[in-house]
Length: 443
Image (cartoon, rainbow, N blue to C red; front, side):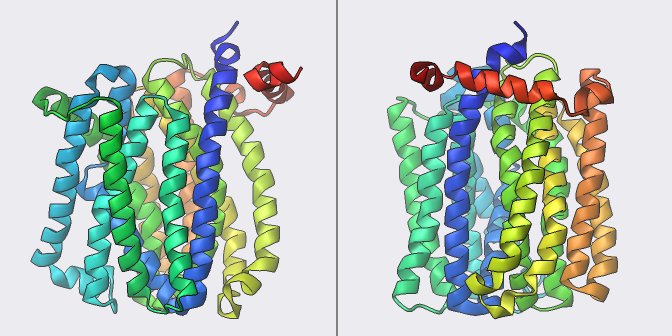
């Protein structure tokens, strides 16, 4: 029995559990986004998007993308949980401190470049969200490293549900101030994450401790992947800020609808990449044959899902979000294939990083990042949001092509073996479903 056949039911179960968490996140994002858009308009939705984007970027950039080495090292040795937890306590303090420090040192960067036209109170709230973003990533990484995908799903379901509940409560109360939405979300979400992290430590009977040698090793691994992440941030986020700079915040609001809906497709490979990364890090997947089969199945699923998203989005965006968001429909047609390319790239990157080769992913990310910098500055001033969409499609496709080359070189697989669709993939999926515990019980 091959590694793929032996692990197929386990991988399928892990993926199914992760899917439930991603589904909950998608539902919460969808509901919360609609409520905020209808309550605050395109400008308010754009402001909320920019604030959360700053928090997400700040947590990763100033926190040195610590979730990646957390998952990698914990998957290899669960006995290091106390030291790994201690490293995350240190890094959340570092990320938050640096975020506010940068703002105080260079306020003009935020006021004129990052968030032009956004009130200082919004910037403060965005930086307060940095700690929450870091904690959410850290807790998810710990669950992944422990391969506790069911617990990870519960965590993300509750965490994302807070976003929808806060938005719903304020919407029902008649709130139309985007600052209030951010403030309430920040307070409730941060309290939830802090309490959850403490409960996790108590449950595992772990007292965080510092281990300088381990932190140095984690920093070495994280540093190799950090540059890739920085360029990925440029590839994924630059368009929003360039669009805000050359156009207006209301265009960011419209564009964010198309990006957000199309990004739901990437949840398919995201689900799989969490499983692949942690199990590859633990040396459980063997050669690249298993990941290649997962990639081929993900491609089929994303193409089918893309058709569905385009169809539903075309008829539903204006009625759900309001007529001022109708311009998101043509953008969606471009962002859907872009999201397919990016999702598949991240799936390949997860396997490569799990094999201890983050520098190879960095090379791919640099190519995509340079591509989108040039295209954003070229196309957005002339074509606005549509220029941003097309720049994303080209850059994401470049990332996927480079990732496909690296994967084959690292695993010594031929292109025809790795990427050619085959009926055997669907048959293996059917067999794995039959070997699941509930399927056997039903039979």
